[in-house]
Image 1: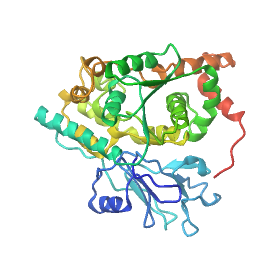
Image 2: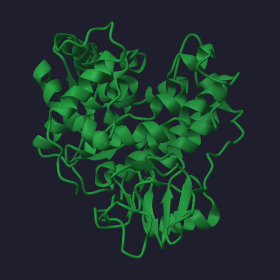
Image 3: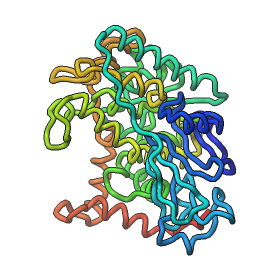
Image 4: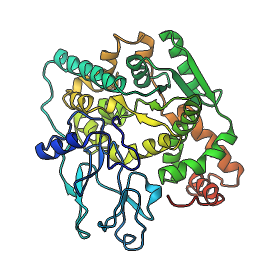
Length: 394
């Protein structure tokens, strides 16, 4: 998410020259952390959807007003942010769309590579280590003040180590993430800023997060809330960007389902299940990007750099996960940067580790949305959103 454009520019995440060359060659991983926008009358979005790009749905196009990113000559309205459109829909990751044709449909231009896995484990790990260094260098070349969203797990700890940036953790006082982050920061010899939450923070932030992300389902809001709330503090402290460890679980086999190969996956191998997880990123990442951007910060995700993605795609099953260890390759390359107990630490999902999910459930029940009600937290979220006046369209 480097080389980010301003609202009046038409390509985000990479230069026009890089995107043009990628379209010409078909290179799905041309050395960026994602890109999206308009290039010479054509919309484009990178293969993992790391940069969001929205279209006005067909039913709303004739009635919608032009946005900053559209022009009078185009019939398809589009935007980087869903709040500027009447009925936004994501342009599929890896696709293009010709703006001059109002009847055009997205064309798949980039496909996620499927390279043969490395047979030599040492070579595979060296490739990954070099890729992480490349990603860190790409962040360091940008003139931004960066802080790290730090939970004490190996993902955010590795990002913190390679960027050497200030650490911030968010959570309720008795949460797993706050204690884990304190412990990891001590082990790493690093200072840590703790953003302690109280229920009123959630009540205030829920409508803002729901609007910014365009999502009101309980899971998405629970995941986005910690990013938004830590981002508020980071922005107030004068930083420009928030670095996150997003993508590590998908790329390196961090989920239980990739080992169990149960009903949640279609693949019959760990590597195949990991690939399925990677392909969920285009729908997940816009939520996280918009939650961070809503605080005025730029999101930075070093572990989603093209070189890291390419290295991850080449990992064999044995370096991904099994019953005894997940994200094996990432942990192995982290040992040169991190204390052993940080490398081996197990981590909870952010909505649970921060206790945001627990406290949001409690608020919902206190407001009368009991657990016996279907989607009681989602209904509570929507009630908070409805009680707030809608902001004017940009």
